[in-house]
Amino acid sequence: MSKIQMKTPLVEMDGDEMTRVIWQMIKDILLTPYIDLKTEYYDLGLEHRNATDDKVTFDSAEATKKYGVAVKCATITPNAARVEEYKLKEMWKSPNGTIRAILDGTVFRTPILVKGITPYIPTWTQPITIARHAYGDVYKNVEMQVKKGSKAELVCTDADGNVSRETIYEFNEGGGIIQGLHNRDDSIASFARACFNYALDMKKDIWFATKDTISKKYDHRFKDIFQEIFDAEYKEKFDAAGIEYFYTLIDDAVARVIRSNGGYIWACKNYDGDVMSDMVATAYGSLAMMTSVLVSPDGIYEYEAAHGTVQRHYYKYLKGEETSTNSVATLFAWTGALKKRGELDSLPELMAFADKLEQATIGTIEDGIMTGDLYLLSTLENKKKVSTEEFLNAVNEKLQSLL
Ligand code: NAP
Ligand code: MG
Image: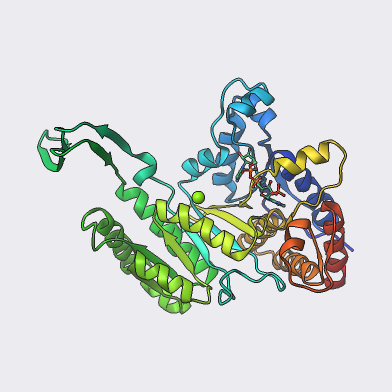
């Protein structure tokens, strides 16, 4: 059988620990036997980031801008313990943060659903994709603890030196706390465009919610920017695609989400997205079944798993013990990237292969062959727990029956 050919290379960002091991296994077992895999390889493993003073992370993001599609392995975000463990020159920043800032992207997280693993909300029969605005609000706040007798004011000086001033609170009865927040019109607009583009791409409705009844300027600005951009640039495209943009209050959104069957994208302000993505991920069962894609407003895509490097399993692996680590989200990062590359380069064969690989993966789990994390959750009667590598081999067997 001749291998599937590619045109443009994928930007390949390798990573750390157990996911780095899985990365190589996926390529060896499921990709290179079938595809003449063309990638531009960047090693974002912590050792190489340290050796290049993190330049490799910046280079990989620039390459993503150039080619348009990247696939990324989970990477360590260094903390004090990692600085010690890897003898780092510096506590390098989160690669995801760096890449997101360069691409000005929005992260969309979608669970992979399989029979036998019922969401805690059983009516959620379709995935809910969460889009989180990853700039500003409480994540870029300034805050103070103040004493009794303090007067807190919001003061803004414009470019011409005009001062606007509003009293926040006079702490006459005792001390307290204050906080200053901001966001930027251009960041909100990028977020809105990334969301509308992704909704068109996925052919799914998009919901957005804020607390605009209480926050009549701050949250209202989000609502207005979304609506202006939708009306001016997307309304006709949405009508043609038969999808909808739906705005409501955050409280109403939460109530509707719980009652829904899923199947839409939920765009969230930064804090809402932080909290709701953990709730939604947990409700669908396993972090190891959550995919993640970073989409820029100009249509650049970077695919990855939502989980980290699965450190505890890696230490077992290093000791030569058998691991049963779930490779599904990492595998779907590859299939997502290959499908997008196939779409952009008009390679139907590549897209069909990626679809079949996804079917084979889901089919394997639904046949009862799964890693330990899913084994604990699955209600299938004839289920079997397998190792990291056994799972990928089982997927390969199933894939061959589909090709
Ligand atoms: P993690 O790697 O997501 O793992 C947390 C726990 O979740 C694991 O110990 C494991 O539970 C379970 N788990 C996660 N993924 C799994 C999988 N594929 N298969 C089976 N079980 C899975 O998070 P972490 O331990 O907090 O972080 C480890 C490293 O990853 C850190 O250095 C962090 O900086 C990095 N990280 C990177 C990214 C990214 O690159 N996108 C995201 C998050 C974290 P059990 O141990 O109970 O089996
Ligand atoms: Mg969170």
